[in-house]
Length: 211
Ligand code: ADP
Ligand code: MG
Image (cartoon, rainbow, N blue to C red; front, top):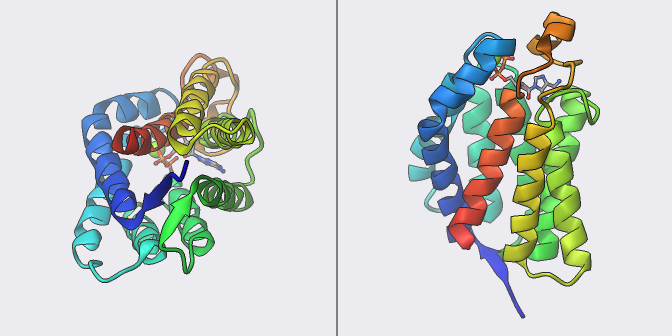
């Protein structure tokens, strides 16, 4: 079975992610109020609004160019830590998609691995540090495992999204070791990480588009 992601689906993913960031702005802000400075929802909503704006001018861009447009929009419009981190994710994803008209499931796995690698390199967070890595890493792993079990793109992505959701939930008892929440030390425990939550929502937006 040939199942790929087209440029058009990637555009729809980014639009769906933008819509989700708008809808979940209050939730993300509330989570960040508990262990940060309460701007994560505002940051993500602003960043993805900028992505939408820039997409309008990117009609001629190929799939890799679309991802790069998203990266630059996030980097240029989000002041918080999450902007450069998500920007790096999409920039590395763009490089991994260079020259491709469509993405196979395996291409998409490589793209996510590249994006996650960029986040880890830039933010230096390990698994369990209570960051977006705690959603992204299990998602990429679960997606890869599903592919090795011959699952198609949509069902592998469903597994990845579920792993991201569980990963975000599993940040609740953790003590933050990176980012603003780490300033709270033990008081950061008992709250879900906002960035892990937005990572789950962004991946879910893609599943919602292709399923
Ligand atoms: P800021 O912390 O600058 O206010 P945001 O509130 O937009 O930025 O984003 C906070 C989120 O960024 C955190 O919940 C966490 O998931 C993520 N984050 C912060 N620092 C790092 C890091 N070093 N590596 C990975 N993710 C990080
Ligand atoms: Mg914040």
